[in-house]
Each structure stands twice: as C-alpha cells, then as structure tokens.
Length: 304
Image (tube, rainbow, N blue to C red; front, side, top):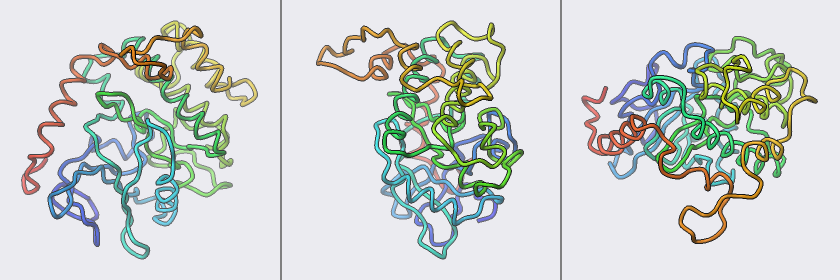
C-alpha cells in the first residue's frame, strides 16, 4: 500500500484502514504538526477489533521501525499506548497499537481556537514527566517525544511514537531536516546524529507543553503561562547540563503538598490528580466523543 488510504490494506496485514489519524500533510514536513509515521484508525478483517495502525515513512528503514515497535511492546506505564501486534519478518512493515478515541495534540488547539488553558498544559507536562521518569528508571530513552507523539484522550494523554529518532537514522548520521521529525522538539545533539540520552527527552518534553501553551515549540519566555515558563526555558537549553531533572520539573509544576484523590478513594499520582473534569476544552471533548461514536460504525468502502 503506497498511499495507505482508507479501505486498503498493507500486504499480509490483518487490518484495513478506516480513516487517517493525522492531517494529510502532517507527515511531510518538520513542523510541530508532523507525525514521524503514517497513522490510521483501522479495523481487523474479521470486524472484531479497532486498532491504531502505523507504518514507517518512505525515508525510514522498515527494519529500524519494526525494531522500535518490538521494543515498545514491553514498555510500562498507564500513559503509554502499547503495541499489540506487528508485521512478521520479511513482510511490509506495520505496527498496531491498542485503540482508544483520541486526537493528536496539534489538533486540540486548532479545535479550541488557540493555545490551551494553563491547567491543561500543566497536566500534560506532569503526565509526560512522570511517564519519562518511569522509562528512564528502566534505562530506556523514549527518543520520540513531540506534539504529534501525544494523543489526547478523554481520560488523559497517551505517549506514542517510541524511538522515532532512532528509527529515522542510526547514531552518527545527522537527522537535520529528516521527514517526520519535528525540528522544534528534536534535541540539538540528536539532530547532529548523537545517541539519544535522558536529557534529550527532557528537551523534547520542554518543547511539547510550550507548543500546547503557545502554538509553537520555541516561544519567547514572556509568551508562556507562569507554570510551564521555567520548564520550557530551562528544558530547551542547548546545553544539556543546564536542563532540569524530571523530578525537578514535576516539583515545579505541582504543589509539593500533593493533591487529594478526585474520588476520595486514596492516594493518586500527581498526574492523576490533575486529570479531572474541565481539563479539556469543550470542542476537544466533542471531537473525541464523535470519533468514539463514528469509528465503530465506519464503512470501509466510503471512509474518508
């Protein structure tokens, strides 16, 4: 499947695309809207399962894409969207993730009509920081955090696109201008071909809430709301030694005294305490609800 439009299938792939997840031009540039892979909502041929189907861009070696997909099957954390199925060796590359109704982060400010509220940005930043801290504790670098890598669901964001930087090019090969890699979220060291390291994830983390708060990944300091201001400013430092730790970021974004459980049932993570009612703009909630209702009934032959 060269264009991978709706109603078609990759060879030996048991899923048929229903609709694209991203805008049609979002995989062709290096802006904050770009996705590092082609992504579709798809249905199994027996009609029993809906998945998020991804395939590598033309410039990405299929074997590198599949290697990252295989590793990501074993990642832990409630805010990671796991790979549940993937192509067999020697066939056209694809990977299937567990599906839940969600929108790519760049679509949410567009629906909202501008930057997202500070509360939403703060919740997003804490979720990402806690998720990356879990990965780093396992000595795993995500190497793919960007606005397009974040899917916004009704119950909170999901981090996807694991290893997009590693899949795009081997260490030692410059990644400047690589299709699908968001130039604003790509750490300078990795852009020059360096090996992904923890402070590279911190750089990308700084860029992503900055985008949600302003519409672009490298805003001026005074354009940012108070809470994410120091996170973005220090996180986006060109000098890795000047970037804050993930623990420091979380502490700066959340009152250290902690927040009560939204249900009163006991302790929750800082991220869970922030993911309460009113976090998402109404138009974002409506779009997620529409996707939830329309996708299961989509007609493959006519899906746009």
